[in-house]
Image (cartoon, rainbow, N blue to C red; front, side, top):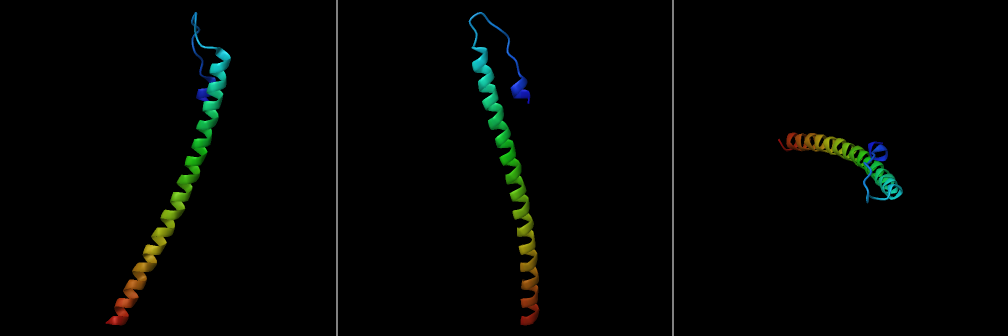
Length: 71
């Protein structure tokens, strides 16, 4: 939203305002897309870490069971 609403000062031989607005619109859309992708990837990472923790816990129980069976 900040990107879309940002305004620039006018100068005698400055940039074309419509071109700047179009660029900022494009930039803000890409930023939003990347933010959503980042959010999705963080959720995937959280799920993977939870799965890894569960697997490590299972591995520990299995190791303990095998050790007890060996004794």
